Image (cartoon, rainbow, N blue to C red; front, side, top):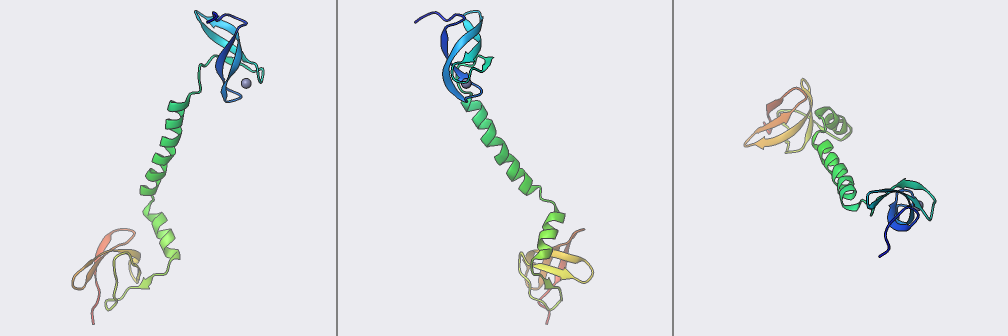
Length: 139
Ligand SMILES: [Zn+2]
């Protein structure tokens, strides 16, 4: 193998071409090239032996995924309410029949989401300010 020196060609990762290409060594640091000039685009940049794959790729794919899931769990109740108000919802009444996940409109408390059905005739409903136990299925 020929010795690397200023002026010789080395394989290096080109930050502009985004691939490993032949570069002419511009400056040395000890036995290693420090700055190189790309033979393809003539761009001069610091020497980098190979594409920074593993680290950069892992960071890129890992971060947004984490962010996305985090955002979803952090969806505020206000956002949920806004979405829900656009959906059909039932008017609450003591004689009504409601199930888990139903959106109801209460005369006093406003819009709420049925969290669970408590047999035989109650439902827990989450409203903006609190979760309430309401009567249903009353004949
Ligand atoms: Zn290049």
